Image 1 (cartoon, rainbow, N blue to C red):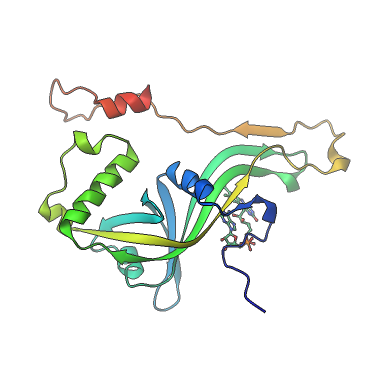
Image 2: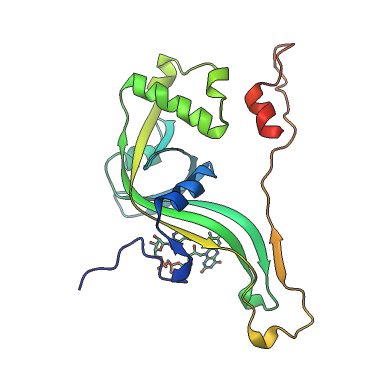
Amino acid sequence: MSQPSRKQVKRVAQRGRYDQETIHAILDASWIAHVSFADTEGQPFVIPMLYAREGDCLYLHGSIASRLLNAVSSGIDTCLCVTLVDGLVLARSHFHHSMNYRSVVAFGKAVTVVDPDEKAAIFVRFVDALIPGRAGESRAADRNELNATTLLRFSIDEASAKIRSGDPKDDPADRALPIWSGVVPIFQRFGEPITAGDASPGVEVPASVRHLCA
Ligand SMILES: Cc1cc2nc3c(=O)[nH]c(=O)nc-3n(C[C@H](O)[C@H](O)[C@H](O)COP(=O)(O)OP(=O)(O)OC[C@H]3O[C@@H](n4cnc5c(N)ncnc54)[C@H](O)[C@@H]3O)c2cc1C
């Protein structure tokens, strides 16, 4: 009998999605992945970090001294998770309290990007993934900065999305209880930009930031 796929959502299977469109949409709506790996002794770690997506690859970057990046770049199996929270789900019973969410679990392996021109281009993607248009408004990475940075290309071999939405799943027997039940939506929003204390006089908030906060 063949092994079930590692990406197959088993627990509440109807919440599982596997299409690229859903997976990419969740990945593009966030900035942070929790990247997990096991070291050579088998000790598991989970480390949060930024990423930028291009097709079915996620770029990860950090210091050349990063234990995580060094471990992951050695070709070991890696798993990462991206989570968006959409609401607090408040049920009539303790048991059914939950959250509405969209999440992705992706399995794959990473390789190090060594070509300096390619690294510079990926830096651009990183900055524009943080805020579209910002790379063109800021200084590009120089040779020393590129040398001080490890850049990994994580190729997604398999991925699943899981999405919970809608009302609490109260037990029928609890529905008559005089207890409020419902969802409190969670929104992520940008605040008013705060200019750096050491900013040069007269430098205005750039278009990318104005657009983000409009
Ligand atoms: C914000 C948030 C809060 C949650 N809180 C809880 C909680 O308190 N308790 C709880 O039991 N569960 C919670 N979950 C659901 C949890 O992520 C798991 O889906 C669930 O616990 C089942 O785990 P499992 O290992 O039995 O999954 P299985 O169904 O056995 O997992 C098999 C495969 O399904 C995929 N998969 C599983 N979960 C996810 C996921 N969330 N996103 C994408 N792919 C997935 C993976 O590829 C995994 O390898 C929460 C999820 C989110 C996003």
